[in-house]
Image 1 (cartoon, rainbow, N blue to C red):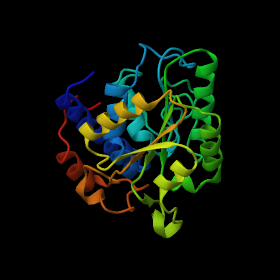
Image 2: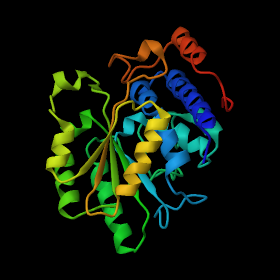
Image 3: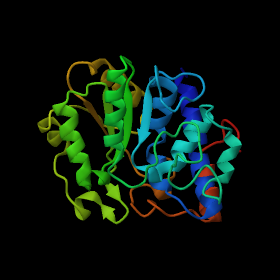
Length: 281
């Protein structure tokens, strides 16, 4: 477990990693990655029950599946700083033969990665399978997954949402990154989804909301509340209201940085806004 100050320091370093990785190869997705930095830092350093080392099967520990795999920069950074692989390996992001591809893959054997993701709409289904496997194995640990809000436009999600409640998969906590933006614009313009909370409730889920999805204290408190609600017959959904590009002022309040890399000048501005705390790779 980390103190509030240490968590904040980790978030700042993760933001630096994100913009540096994407800038180096002029490719990647900084906006959503920055928006989810606080969530993933909290999850991996304060909430999940994890074993030392990496076991692909995830037995007797909590497991996490990233469904919106394009935000791999934040996932890789958090995993590296948690000790899954050397931080220096972040320097290989999106390079040929790197284990750190633009979307997470499993064939390269990168510790911490249990599914290939990036084809949106699939992560919740995989998480459901893992959650049911834990029940069959009498493993009381939990399964977590993160989805983008635009990703909910994929129909497979709603089959999985229906299945999870119907089969009482109550060891699952699914978080929706509710930044209301996707690559082509605001989600309400591209494909309005209405009241997402009401929809999950109607499908038989319990729903919690993090009003400030970039506030570490609120994130940790809500995740711990969600944990306390497991095992009671319903899957749990957390609606995480984040700001895309959070922590880099010119990337906020716009969808423009969903999949665009900063130039040299923009990188310098982004780094100046996020102090180095754990050492750049």
